[in-house]
Image (cartoon, rainbow, N blue to C red; front, side, top):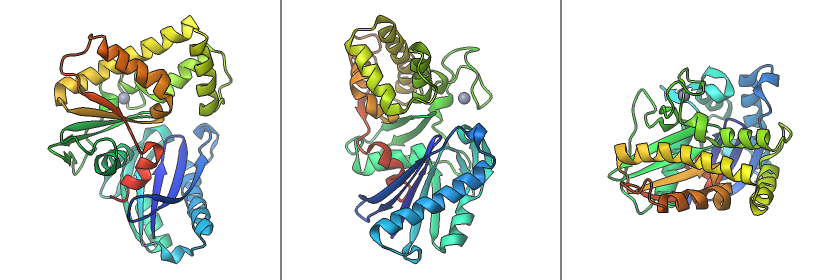
Length: 301
Ligand SMILES: [Zn+2]
């Protein structure tokens, strides 16, 4: 039995993934504000074990049937050890060894955006493109690059860190230490934060609720909201056009929680591109097909 784990900046998902890459059973848990968690490493390890126990229970299987575990993480990987999970406040974590010892199974770890990208390339929206870029718009912005059908993979670094491409000189401070990074302007975390501020919503408003409120405001032609969305799309397009000019991919696939805002964000993005301002070298922009399951599926590829 194969277990896929997606450790995100704000939630953990665990699934049993079939050999045909379908999700058999899935359990998820939100990670509350990390400032309120005493020991974040312990919190993550404990919750992964709980979620694995729950998915196995759902199909009535014991833990000894686990043959392989794949983990998608928001950080860098060197010699199977995870480093720099900025959004979780973790500098270093040897999750592979912990899970290998506990489950006596083979465990692989890979950067989350690379996992989702592999899933989209093999069974999702990028199947028909040889040269492509995957952008994961979530808590931050992760990325992956495919040239001639193969994903660029470095032995010592992640590479394709498009989220930390600087798009504003001396701009907003990023957790990576630089200022003006793409993800400080175009991640979904940034987008939602801005909406919460603009509409004076509660800090803890769920993503579903934000989407519902936002849809109403857009339908009611709230000008301030529309201006805010346009500004967000402009920032996103600066990053996309930089990537388009440097990599010149046939397609850019956007995944992460951005996919849930198809009508509000994706449609407007395509409209803006079609207006012609960025038409030069602009690749086809597609939405991720596997949505948030891509990380768990790709972690086992
Ligand atoms: Zn940065």
